[in-house]
Image (tube, rainbow, N blue to C red; front, side, top):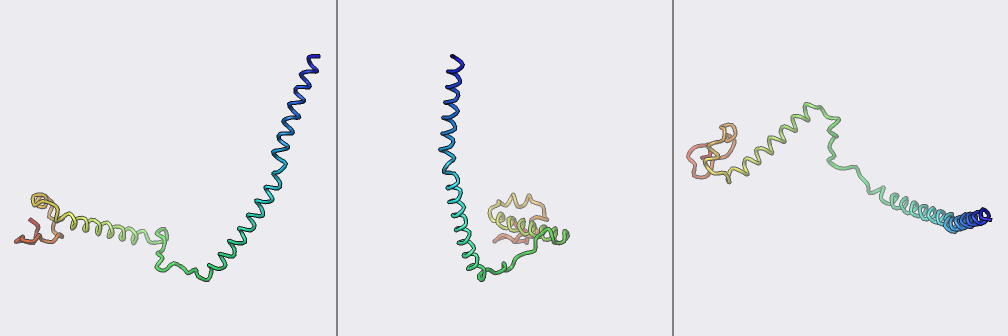
Length: 126
C-alpha cells in the first residue's frame, strides 16, 4: 500500500510540474511572433531612414591616411617633430615661471632656444 501511495504522490508531482510548464510555455510562440513582427517593422523604418540619409553622406574631408600604411621613417620623423614642438611649447610656458637660479642651472642647449627675459642684457635668460 505504501508503494502505491508514493507512486500517486510522484504522479501528482509530475502532472503538476507538467501543467505548470505548459502554462508557461503555451504563450511563448505568440510572443516570439510578435517580437518578429516588431523587428520587421523596425527594420523597414531603419531602411527608410538610411535611404533618406544616403544622399547627404559625403566622404570625410581632410581624412588622413592610416599610420599603418605610411612609411615608418616618415612617421617616426613626424612623431619626433611633434615631440620637439611639445617640448619647446612647454619650455616657453615654464620660462616665465622659473626663478633665475633654475634657468642658470639648466644646460645651454635647453636655454639657447628660449627668448631672453625682459630686462636681461644678454641673449640668455638670467
